[in-house]
Amino acid sequence: IERGSIVLSIPSSDPIANDIDALTNQCYRKAIVLVLDVKSDFIQGIILNRPTNIGVKEGMKLVRPGHGEVYDNEIGSNVGKEETGAAIIPHRWKVWFGGEVGGPFSDRPRVSCLHSVTSDVGKNVSEEVLPGILLTSFDGAKAIIEAEGANPSDFWLFCGICGWETEAFYREMNVEGLWRVVSSDGGTILEELNMLRCEEEEEFAAQRTCDVDSDPRNAGLHTWEMLMDMIGKEDEAHESEYSFGDLMLKEWATKVLSFSLQEDRSFLMSDYIPNSDGEEEIFDVSEYDPASGMRSSSVCSTPQSSTVVGALIRASSAKRSPYLLADQGFHKSIILIVLDDEESSQGVILNHVTTETITLDLEGTNVEIPVRYGGPFQDLARGEGDSKPPLVFLLSSLSSREASIGVEVGTSGIFACTKQNITKAINAGLASVADVMAVQGLSMWKKHCSRSGVRGDIEEGYFEEISNNNIGNVWRRLLSQKPLTQETLDENLLIATDAWAMGRAVLQDDPVYVFGSDVDTEALADEALRRWVKAFFL
Image 1: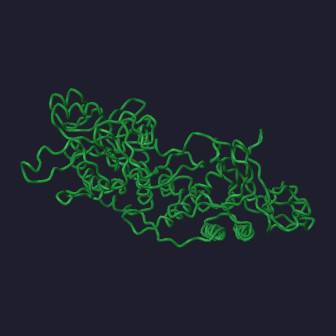
Image 2: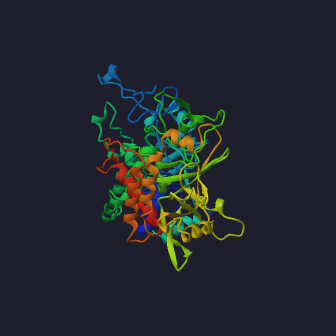
């Protein structure tokens, strides 16, 4: 690998590793990377096949448009109606996603421009990457335009870079087979980039040969397939076409590259999600950050006085699950809120049964019940010197309150107990094994403003409260889940989905499909959850 190398990301041949990448690392799936720098400890490059629909308006200002909007730039074609009778074709800067480091959601974006202007000015402000392909800054690109009469369409403006530790990259390439070097010249690369630039929405698109990858939601997949064909790997390329990983990549591109979804930030999640408020925003390129206008206000008001302890909540029933691309374990989850103070809200997921069991030593017999995954924060519940976080036993029975078994969680009718409490109650005939859940781990929402914590997520639509009238039915349905095995996986997921549906009436809206497919995004999110459970629990 050297400066100017083109490498293609190859899906893993290991099904589980491939699923984990599809669930957690969609950004680099089937990426085409131009290597810019190779050092003994680090390799740096930019992704070439991830166009966005961000453009530049008059005065060289970057704008965040809705999908398909095209803005005329002050700089138009040199040939207009006066000379040819043809309309002036507008030019604009098209922004490309170059990588997550310094990318569109970074507070410090890293902007660079590829071009093929080989004049003296072009060479003076640029560095050659490949014969005929040069790299410059945005200021350098503007200088070339001013001196040479070039257009924004002569440049490819990338926001962000990608990088790897050199040893890790070579291991991924040579041992795991996740990267393949492409022998390609500058002319071929420019041809592929030009195809990606073509915009189907433009008035003059009919005069061009537009590629499907001109739409950011396709994530440059067609371009990747064409390069695979060039190196004789067309069969390998088409084997994974329309696969689960490709569908996840397209959904990632729809969310991250097209800037068209109206979503807000969840306090459970750590990433920023694009949101369009319908107002056109203009950014100076030196301070470019499309996410800056999407973040929740940092001004805090008086903390909420109402508590949600004891609430049973279920994950959003939105057409596009907010947990499709990250934290898939929360998709269609059912959570009991056990704590809500000034610093955080905490809860336990009830619908994820694991392969582990816990034995209850009862009079005359021993009974095993499944251990449930309560959430990703395992260490918060771990005592000093403990090898594992302690189990929380939950019990819901008519006699629990009268017999003072454990402590009721809010007014839910669900009681938190110790193993000793549970064993005594069952031996005394005050409870049944069939009424008990054992949960390990916590889910947590941070607080810093009035609309934060789990209450903020409920108000934003990430979760929905289950009415007290439905809690009993949901609880009993979940109790029918069995310890997780390959054989019980699908049955357990079906039971969890049934319980989730019992929590609240679901309106039957028209489905939303993954771009360029007939796959419903809800079905994709269900499949993502299934693969998440299989990859991380089995």
